[in-house]
Amino acid sequence: MASPADLLRVCDPGEYYRSFLERDLLPDGRATSEFRPLSLQLGVISSAYGSAMVRQGGACVVVSVQPEVSVPIDGSGFIVVNVDSSLDATDASLSMQAQLEDTVACLHSLIDDDAIVNRKSLVVVAEKIAWTLYVEVLVLSVDGGLTDATVSALVGALADLRLPSISLKDEATDDDRPFELSKAALVISDARHRLELVDYPVSSTFVFHKATCADGDAKKRKRAVMRCICDPSEQLLALMTGACNVVVGRQGQVYRVNRGGGGEGVSISTLDTVVSLAAKRQQSVELVIEQALRMRAD
Figure 1: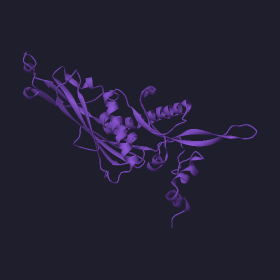
Figure 2: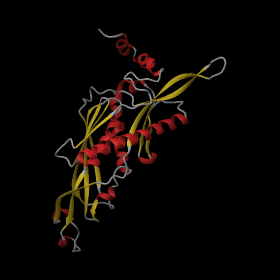
Figure 3: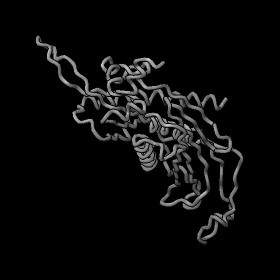
Figure 4: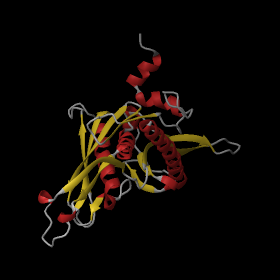
């Protein structure tokens, strides 16, 4: 038989969550300032040159990277991202669809800004040889933290990436004819090297909850304040009118702040709190990635 709490969650989810949020708690036992644990596995796809799987709450994402030789343009290589979801579009809620769209926008923003990989570092031979990295993102499940899980999986897969050493034969570099990659004599070594990352950006998602607190005067009047909630579940994200996604790198470098609809009345101090919490989470997620890399090397 369903418990009263389970019935309330189904019949009146707003009141169900409100009963927890008034105590600065979430139904899963977390404080509203805590994130769900992140699980990361590297090398999950043996045929890929780099891969990672991340679970965060009920969200699960797999990212793989395959390099191909190409000709650089404007002194840069390329990173091409494709996002595929196993979710049936007819079954996905509006919240899930919005998360998928925001996740795609976030990934492209980080790639375009060279926030993870400097695409100029993908050039092997100036004006002739560069790497194009084809990144495949497979979303297996969604639960509020999709963008967060996907960004961590992308960074993990790129950190796991090992590129072959490649060069041109001497005779291929000493003529004045236009360079044609299809006719080039390439020397590809079995030795592989790690791609140096520019930064380890981490995405953190928040929603805002209007709470009341006492002013502290004799009449004990109460006033409404907006408080942030870290890493909301899918249901909570759909219930709240205001959401915010923040991507932070090392030393508090802010790459992205995307505020969804709603959230009116959010103060500067609350936004500062959001960025501070995101910066702390960046440090913890980077440690998870570094530990996984050490385990991969053993």
